[in-house]
Image (tube, rainbow, N blue to C red; front, side, top):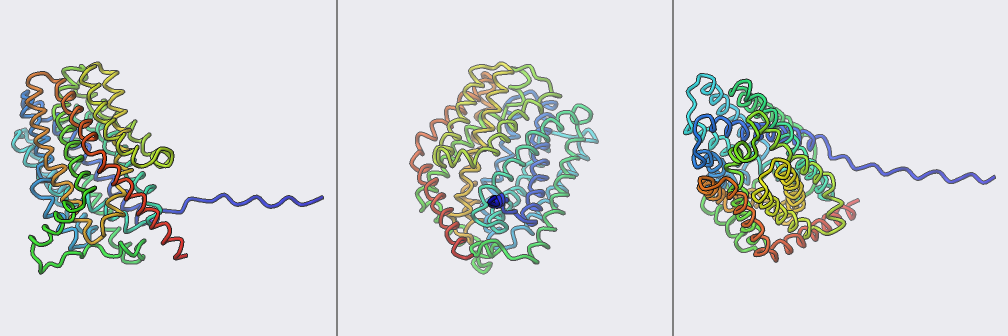
Length: 436
C-alpha cells in the first residue's frame, strides 16, 4: 500500500519581534492615559460651568499644540533618538497630570487650570504620538507594516475608548481625582517601557535599511528655520500629500465641531448620566476593534483607495445620523459605526507616511501634516460650542457634512495616496524577497 505524502506544514505568521511588542505596550499605556484624561476633564469642566462654549474650549486647548508646537517637535524627532524622546515627553506629561490631580483633590480646580494642563500634556503628545508611529517602520519589516499598524490601532481603541472611557466615568463618580491620578500613572509606566525599547534596539539590528537611523536627518547646526522649510516644502510640493493634509484638516475640524460638546449632547439630548457617559463613548471602540480585525482583508478585497475614502465619508455620515436621530440607541449604533470607519481608514492610510515619505523627513513631514490638519481643529471645536448654544444637535449635523464634503473635494488626492502606498509596499516586498 502506498504511503500517503506527509501533510505540508502550516505556515506560521512571521513574529513582529520583542522591540515592537514593547513599543506596542508603551503606546497602549499612553492611549489608556489619553482616553481617561479626555473623558475625565470634560466631566470636571461640566461641574465647573454649563456654558457649551467654555466646555468646547477644552477641545480647543487639546488641539492648539498641534498648531503651535508640532513643527518644532517634528524638527526634534528628526534630530534625536525618537524612542528616547518618548521617554522624556511621557515623564513630563506624568508630572503635569500628577500636579493637576493634587489641585483637583484640594478642591481648587478652575477651567483655566484644566485648559493649561491639557495644553501642556498635548505638547508632550506632539512628540510621543508621531514618534510611536514612525518607529514602527524601524522595528518591523515593511511587509509586516499593515499587521503592525492594525495591532497598534486596535489596541489604541481598546485602551483609549473601550477601557479608559468607562473606567474614567466610574472613577469620576467615586472621586474626580481618581481618573486623573490614573492618567499620571499610565504616562509614567509608558516612559519606563519606552526606556526598555531604547535598550533593546541597541542590541538588535533595525528591520529595514531605510529605517536605520533614529532620526538624524536634520543637522543641529542648521538651526530651526531651514529644517522647517524643508518639511513644509516637501509637503506642499507633493500634490497627493498636500491634498491628504487638507482632507485631514477638514476631517479633524468637522470631527471636533461634533465632539467638542459631546459631553453635553450625551447628557442633555440622550439622557445619559455622568456615570454612563464613558460607557456610551466606549461604543466607538466596538466598531473600531472590529475594523482593526478585518482591515487587511478589506483592503485586499476592495482596495486601499475604497477603504480610505469610504472610511472618511462614513465618519461624516455617522455624525449626521447622530444629529438627525438624537435617540440613545441610534446614536450609540452610529457612534460604533463611526469607530469602524475611522479605524479602517486610519490603518489603510498610515502606510503612506511609513513607506512613501523618506525616513530622514518623517518627523518633520508628520509634524507639518498635523500642524495644518490638527491645528485647525480648535476652530472646529469653538464652532461646535457656538452651534451648541443654539441647539446641541447642530454640531453633529454641521461637522458631519464638512467631513463628507472634504472627501468629495479631495478624492483625487486620496486615490493617488492609496496608489503610492500600494506601490511602495510592493517594492518593499520585492526588495525583502531579493535579499533572502
